[in-house]
Length: 294
Image (cartoon, rainbow, N blue to C red):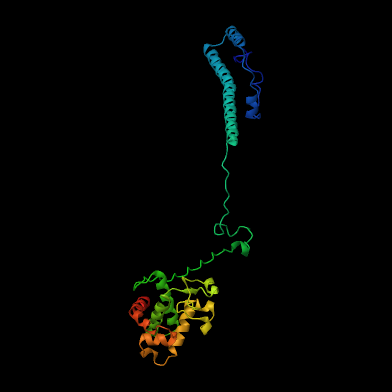
């Protein structure tokens, strides 16, 4: 004990009483030494008894010393716990990153942005005209209208009805009246039964579409016209449209043909050995022409 009754603690840290206020607080904290051992603290207590300490001062000093020792010892433990927790967190994060890099990832398809989504300030090159040009699909050709199939009438089959239709079609193209069409159909009924005949005498005629073969000299086609008589070439007479035009052209040249009986008008053109047989087909020819012109 000093003369001013101040307790002279030999176990207290050195240099604490003579510090200056100019020393920063961080330096002052740093001068704390390692906590004293239990034996040193007990020795201090014995010295205190020898130096007549007061009970109150000794109790206060012991409390302060224990508090300082507990604070100093707890600090490293808390820092160690924090460090251990931090290291564990970093190790777990590293494992997660390694696992995520090892996962199989689905490839990402990069879709180019449209011009509208591109920012106007972006320095992207303008597309070339060929890049923005769109190929228009070619227009599909319109299907050709199928010819209207007319149901056969007057006891005809479909092939006969189709040939009658060709006769009426060719006559309409020439602009002849209906009476001429009836005469033409009735004549074809008598001459070929409305079938397109080839000739067994002219093998050439069989190279063209035909539905039957006849042996009446060189007569061919729907009207049994003879190439040798000047009606036309074999291939022309095998065409129903050409054969019809040849017949109607000859009919129109007969004076007053429209007022003549059908059998007389037809015979004037055909010069047949049986001139009276054309009349029997007049009613049927009239019905067929009416069905086609509807």
